[in-house]
Length: 343
Image 1: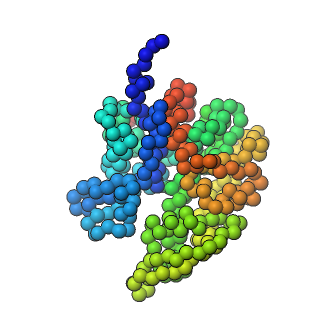
Image 2 (image 1 turned 90 degrees about the vertical axis):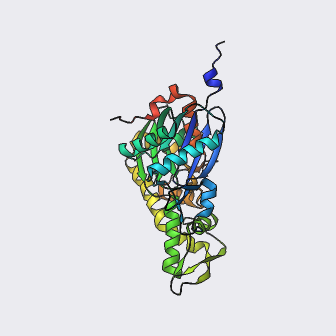
Image 3 (image 1 turned 90 degrees about the horizontal axis):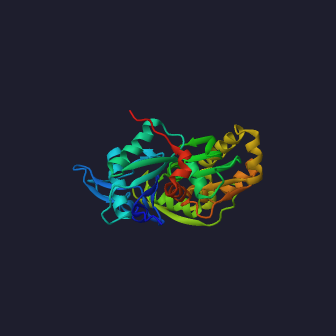
């Protein structure tokens, strides 16, 4: 039997480079890193203070000389240099031993431009990658959930991340029909912040908004119960203030964002070929991504589409696991890789 050192000592990585979180999958192992996509830097010197979890804890709590930055916005790179340094840091943290230049597979939103794809590829190459492979997020999620992407059968996936919502119908190693909207968990947080401003004249932080979303966020017709005190700064008198908010108010705050996602799903279904529509009727719609955990969203989609809607067991991990599967068997999945033009 041929002994393959390259397989045994492989350090190839799959990365879900998300707006909210970055996950790293090590070939022949499993997920080895899951941290927020946040970097803390000093304003004047541009010195990096912290990455990931440590930087996330600083959001809204830093002195004037330190700022927290998210290098990705709406699923794409907004700050090239910081993204490169963040990727390099996460690679070193995921695989702390000195390693040769790895091959890296990265998932990207299906609706991004060639320029945005090249920015992702270049960031990974500058961070030390030997080769970079890109795969569309909905395709990666479908592979991670074990859908039969190679068969002439329609599968529909909705992946709701921090910056984008990806809706796609997949068959025969390809995306037949897709809609990518730049609405996700971040927009839900923003909607909660704006609701507090308009309703209570209260300014709350990003982390507080996320906590409220996770605890009480829901979509109609879910009957949310309970309430919680929320602390912030009164916009009228400028002093700290506490207000009490209930689950129905949070649902009201999120209604516009939820409506946008629902309408996009309906639009994608309207433009799906009839044969594949019949498959979706039989097989249903699968949901992944952190946003799919919003209470009542699956029920809302069932009512609006009259289709079975299933939330995956580990929605946060579907995309990175699918990207990892592609990396472990590149020959079988070569058709699903996104081609980037080199200039």
